[in-house]
Length: 338
Image (cartoon, rainbow, N blue to C red; front, side, top):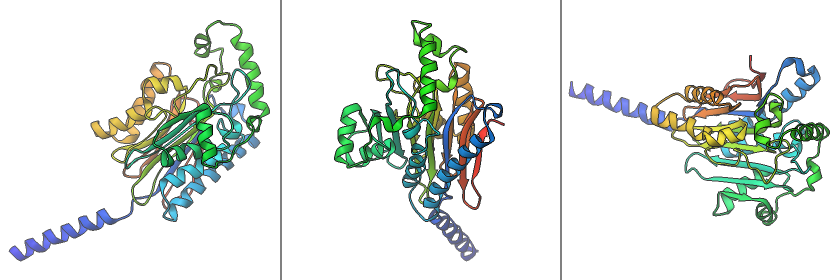
């Protein structure tokens, strides 16, 4: 009897050891911004272009994971592809400021030791997400801004471009319409929250979250901010805990939306806190936070991966450009809410 008991215990210990040694299920989720996205307002050619770029980005990120690479490399690679596309409000497709230039923000974070790097208000860095990662890995700081961030980019020998590289005609037309609308009120905030100001002028972001074979969670976010922003405005994307967060004990989150609300309600950090301290599933926590945010006027969406590798997305708008891929499955791509 004692022999059988010892064998039973030893067997259970072996199974536990094997379970602990087993690689985590790898997976990645990406987004390209949320907003008033409807089938009626999008041509088949536009839809195909968005879906093709989303698939390329998520497949590239997943390929890194499938080959044993880190989630940090996966989210970086996916976000670079989205930054290089003129379709999204980040990098090449960044919106215009009130003055007619471009100011870009980005952040990246890893969940094991909560190391993070972020930049805000950069004007000549081709891929802000690369600079954010350099801040995390090659400096003692978390957030660098403006000219100082660009000086650091030069030291890191990152690719720099003229600010006009980020110009696109449809973003320029959006700026002209926004400027015209803004002349009708002395207070921008009142107008930006009114039905007269299209939601897509207030936000637009790209991002990625992933889990690798070692269970490392990572999150990355990059944005051009809001159309016609002024006075060096910085949104939620580069703020750790607001638009970007990763913690191996809970989840990783990248957000897109009206940044002021995501900052005030600490959206990314709140989702992960509910997972860690309330024991909720990440998908449940994210749904709760996004619905609560909508109740106070905050619109947008989030992508999430938890410590078990469950991938999800959550939005309280008409649509969000998004894609995900997990082990044993092809990429899933979606744009509209339903």
